[in-house]
Each structure stands twice: as structure tokens, then as C-alpha cells.
Length: 434
Image (cartoon, rainbow, N blue to C red; front, side, top):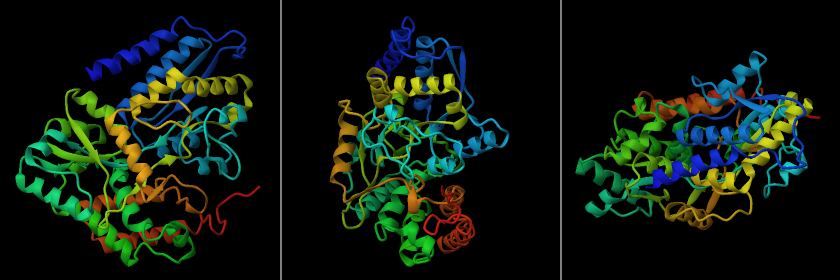
């Protein structure tokens, strides 16, 4: 039933736009315009939302065509860099790596009339380069509620209780405790991020700036301890053994078909689970540390929509891009996007998301610390652009036992030393100044 309702919402959104044209008196391009468009394509539900939004937008503004140039064979960042290298930087882009592209002079400043559509839009160097679309809910573990109830398992309130739960599920033998979609390297970030928050930045909130100054090292004892705990989840057999060939898009099916009891991810997976089986009962819990403290990921970041300087230089294209952002944030459209993805709003729109997401909101409010993703920060906490995937590849090797924690962290420190020679926001190396 939930899936049917979601499909009806999407269909109504698209159909409702068909007979509608631009509002009377609204500025529209003077001639036909084509916008090249790039966004992340790792999540099936988001792809569905984007396709629905594009269809509705083009119906309302028939003079504007949006051509999706998102590559399917590479990561978002690599795909965007490849397009830039051949002189095909897109007009309209889902905002990621904003500081990188702002410094490269590739993205335009966003006008105040768009920035004012949202609350507390984050700026970079005092300027606005993107219109944020959501505030992230905490990461946590989705789990098979019926199985937990059958076995008498309870949501863990400390890290040791979490380990005990994993061991109990493993011993039960009915299913794997956890499924991880490590075939997609970016998926590694969901588990990485939570252990990183609990054991690295919880110890040193300024870990990244201290790496740049040399006051911290990837090889420090508390970092070794934290990622030893991370790797142990795999090495103790708590993760479904085919994780290196399992994609992010498969993890919901592993949960609903009883192949695995849990997985860690973001709030966007609520709809994915419901789509996989509308009748499946699932719960959610955050990962506490040993002391029962909550350190969570979330809040508004430099994400959303941005457009290129070339787009901004073309009056009709700039107007088309701005109409797209306004269209996305229009109340009915924005509600459809937020409820489809279970993302928290950055406007004053009121939404009752339901039990699971409401619990996430309450957890975030009760958290001891809340921080942005380690690769989604700016200022002196911005990491070198190539370092994220380097670290995730090391994490894959830890998980398979191909590399020790100590060797992997030593390699990460060596790579950090190399990359920070040309990029160090603390000293200003590699940071363009005006």
C-alpha cells in the first residue's frame, strides 16, 4: 500500500504540471533553452524523484529542456572532473565539493532571492554558491523488527551491547547480522563515518585541522583503536560475506528477504525499504559509543543545487536554472522530494515523516555531538579532494583482511602528507585568495 501511495504521489506530481504553464507575469527565457544537468545517481529513489521533477518542470516551462549528462560508470566527483576536462562542465549541478569548484572558478554565486528561500544557508568564504535542499538526519542501523521481536533482541544502548547483538545474531545462524554494499566505494562512507565520529573526532573535534598542522596523525593510538573496532565488525564475521560484490542498491532487498538483520545508512533508505516490501516491519537505532553517548552525523551542509559560471553568463540559461531551483522548492514539489527521501527540510514547511524519521529527529536533538560528514566540510576541516576514496579503499582492504589497521593508517598518513603539500586550508596552500 505504501508503495502504491508513493507511485500515486509521483504520478500526480508529474500530471499536475502538464496543463500548467509559467505563472502570469513570471520571467521566463526569451528563447528555447537547454540546460545540461548532473546529479548523483547512486540512489534509486532519488533517480525516480529527479525524473519526476524534470518531467513536471519541462511541462510547466516547455521552452526549457533539461538534458541529464550524469555518467553511470564513475563516481559523481570523477564524472564531473571528466566532463570538465573535455570542456563540458554542466550548467546545473547537484552541489557537492562546493569549495573545490568555487576555487576553480567553475560555479557562480547564487543570487539573494534564491538564498532567501531557505533557512540558514551555509556560505563559503562569505559567498553563497549553492541552495541547500535538506538537512541530514543521523546515520543509524535499520533492522528486521519481526526477527528482533521473535528472538527477544533489543536495540543496543552501548557499543558493547551492539557487539553482543551482532554475536547473538551470528550464533543464531538464521541470517547475517549486517549487510554492507561495499561494491560501491561511496557506500563504505556510511559505516566509516559513524566509527570516525565515535572514535576519532569524538576524541579530537579538530582532528582534520590538527592533521594539517601535524598535531595529529592517522597513526595516533585513538585512531588505530577506532578503526580496529570498525574492521572487527567484518573480521569477526558479523557482515554478510559477499559484501565486496554487494551494491548499495541491493541492501534493502537483503533486509526484507531475511538475508541480513541490519544495515547502516541514512534516512533516504526508509523509502527504499518500503519500496522493496511495503508490508515489511523495520526499526532503526543509532550507534552509541561505550559510554552510551550519541555522536551523530547530520545538519545542513553545502549541498543542493548550484550552476556554472558559463550558465550564469547566459541570461536565458541563468533564468532557467533559477526557475529550476524555485520549482524544486515550491511547497508541493519540495514536500514530495522530502517525503520520498526522508530528508529534513531547510524551509519552514511542516511535515510529519512518520515513526522512523521522527525518531531520527529526536535522536539528533538528544545527541551529545552532531557534525557534518568528514568529506562534506569546508574551511580548515576540508579534506584534499582525492583523499576520501583513498581512505575508503583502505577500509575495504581492512574489511577483507588484506591489510592491517596499522599498515593502512600508515599509508593514509603518507598519502595525507603528499596531498597536503599542495592543499592545506590551515596555512592557505592551494587555496586561491582574491
